[in-house]
Length: 181
Image (cartoon, rainbow, N blue to C red; front, side):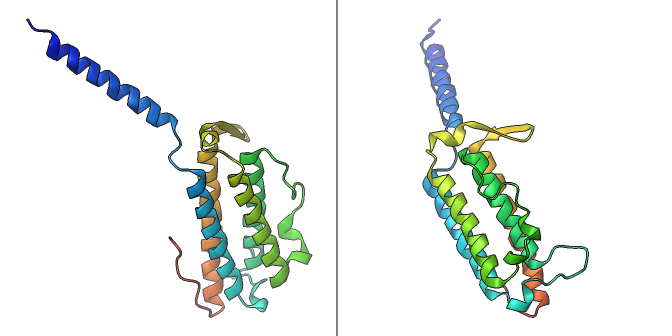
């Protein structure tokens, strides 16, 4: 019996398995792509801030939910928290309750605070290497790769910016167009 085809098939399967393991260890995204995504998110969020009227900044659709400013400040605090976790750098807003800071509830101050948080996050991403995306970090009791943590951070800011669409519409303003690319 000729064992050559069997050995060839076995060698081929081994190579494919090895390639799969190498591929699995690589991050699915790159720092370049992540930086571009966060820059786009910053610009899109700025459009939300720009379109909201000054009197709409502290608008609450109902008394029990956050105002537009508080939504944006919640997003801001999270950007700082996630940026610090992913980079290992200190959170410059640690211990501050941004949502409660009245000095951040004007359109100009709010816009600056939000944009500064995106700059912190973008700098955190730029400070990483593609290889570091596969490294594990802790978030509370959970452990995940930096890449997964950045995906969760992006999802969080997208969610809260999206909630602000309703606030803008309820003030009779057309929200910015989607910015997927």
